[in-house]
Image 1 (tube, protein in one colour):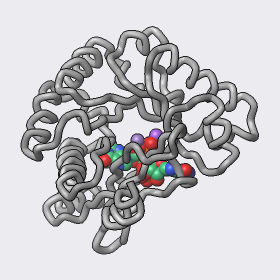
Image 2 (tube, rainbow, N blue to C red; image 1 turned 180 degrees about the vertical axis):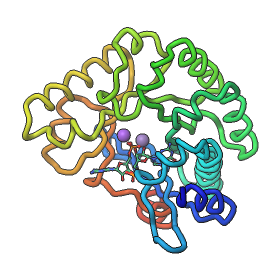
Image 3 (cartoon, rainbow, N blue to C red; image 1 turned 90 degrees about the vertical axis):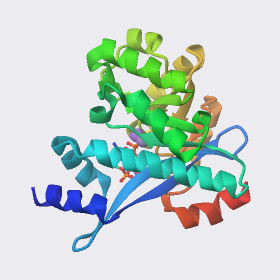
Image 4 (cartoon, protein in one colour; image 1 turned 120 degrees about the vertical axis):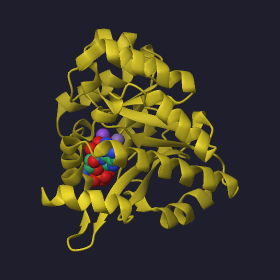
Length: 253
Ligand code: G
Ligand code: G
Ligand code: MN
Ligand code: NA
């Protein structure tokens, strides 16, 4: 309850900020995208991780406001980097289920893109498999979002309960393999089999596939052998503040 009240103030007082984690092509080793991740600089508690405050924001409904702030701010950074002359790349933003269920979601996303002046093709929204809980709503929301020209990925893929039937029917562009599978890859044959199978399935379904949580060279080699398209994880970089992202990654493109 205390954090919930603090969070209302935090939105006004600009205590939230974004970090960016680069995503790399496993074919070319080039950075091809980034994920924006929210952080909270709490005046008394210091930096609080989203793992702690996102669930509270979800329960209180504040996630809708916070999520829009994240989306607008992420698009603004990306647009400004494009204006600064860096090669344009796509920015991924996490969408909570509360946001996903808004009846006018696509309109709101469209309004933000217009306000910021960023082309839709440079935005990817990450949703989780829990959207398939209500398949009719999921389908209509995804179609409306796709009409804007943005990309859609399924985050934490493999941990939820979306059926393969839904996967076939949903207008999505990418699967992001949950880092739990990637982390145990070299230790657990079952996880290796799962990663390999998800990757193959993604290829057959004409979907892009990103491995999350890539932490070492052995995992990277395995993923390359499987023709996994992209990777994200501590091996490449942890999420970093905007200035660091610009200096370390954008300026080297
Ligand atoms: O960045 P970190 O690993 O601490 O993130 C922890 C969790 O918080 C992840 O599941 C991530 O998807 C989620 N998260 C980070 N930023 C956002 C955001 O802007 N919106 C939503 N809904 N979730 C986020
Ligand atoms: O659920 P989601 O994929 O949005 O979570 C993203 C979060 O995962 C990031 O905020 C980051 O803190 C965390 N993360 C990113 N790469 C790695 C990694 O290689 N290892 C671990 N343990 N966590 C990672
Ligand atoms: Mn994510
Ligand atoms: Na994830």
